[in-house]
Length: 257
Image (tube, rainbow, N blue to C red; front, side, top):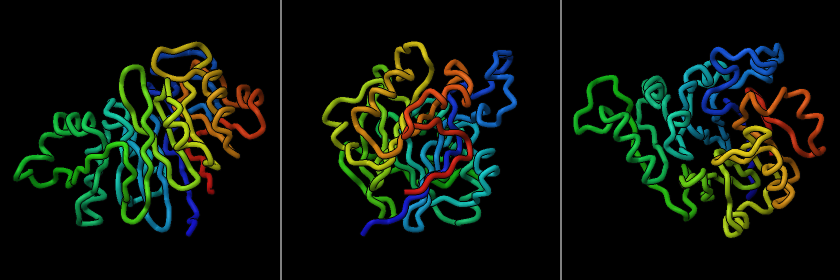
């Protein structure tokens, strides 16, 4: 049975966000709200299950802005701080739900979370610590409360990162290279989200041309770019130059498939 999927972009910015602290470039001083980007994160809702992908340093602000007070699980793409630094704010959701928050991620994510949030993994955590349960994932599909998730392994420079496919939707961030075997897992997606950092080449992220070439290869009905830096250019200008079926994502954008 095919279920309707709703994706909300909680954040679409790179590790520094946009505007960048102290920067006076045209993007960072733009009055277009689409040029104001918190760190990359999304909320996927499918069949009543709400899944957050990555809890960056803006997680609390993103959930408040979104009006969401709940989620059922958190998936992590990788362990960099712009994707894990807001996990402690899951405490408020713990309080509302009065149950553990299931987390899903790689060995690298597990090690990083144990190091950063050691106080949440002790035998007797202090009152008020996040109540979490980590679930290790690999390259095989897994389920989150009945929702089938297909992990897609990509390379962020030398670091392995996971993207995720939910039915007709694929979400990937912080990718530089995706091999053919993993691209086959993406093909057939109606909606694909991929990072497009900037115009110039970057050592660990796709730039705009590489992201466009990737979309041309996997051929979704609709594509969206995320994890965008101020070096890509103003939203309104860049979007005019994109193919008809490709758009720049922005904070607060909601899509359904």
